[in-house]
Length: 134
Image (cartoon, rainbow, N blue to C red; front, side, top):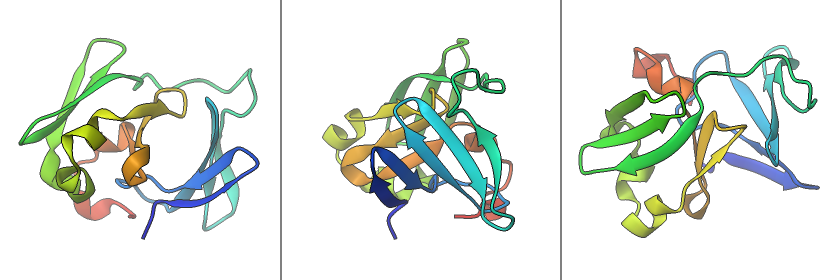
C-alpha cells in the first residue's frame, strides 16, 4: 500500500511509513501541513496558518544512508541513527533513489518521491516498533 492517498489542488494526503498511534493522516502543501486524527476527525496539528502554533525542534538538515543505518542530521546539530532494517522500502531502494530525498512539513519529515515514501523524524525516536500504527 502506498503511503500517499491523494494529491489534489496542490495538497498531498499521506501516512508516514513509521507512524505512531493514534492513527492519523498528514496533509501537506508546500511547507505548510496539518495532521488529522482519524478516530475523532479532529485536527492534531495545523501549520497551514503562517502564524502557526509552535514548531518542532526536530527539523532535518541532511540525510545519509549506509549499509546498516539511516542517519538524519538535525538543524540543532544532533544526529539520529536508526537501523535501515526498520525501513524495508529504503533498504530495497537504489542509491540514486535514496539520494533524491527532500524535507517536508517544515523540515519535520523526509520524503523520497521516487519510491513514494515519507518518514517522520519525531517517530524515529519511538521506543517500540510494535507501537507504530503503520
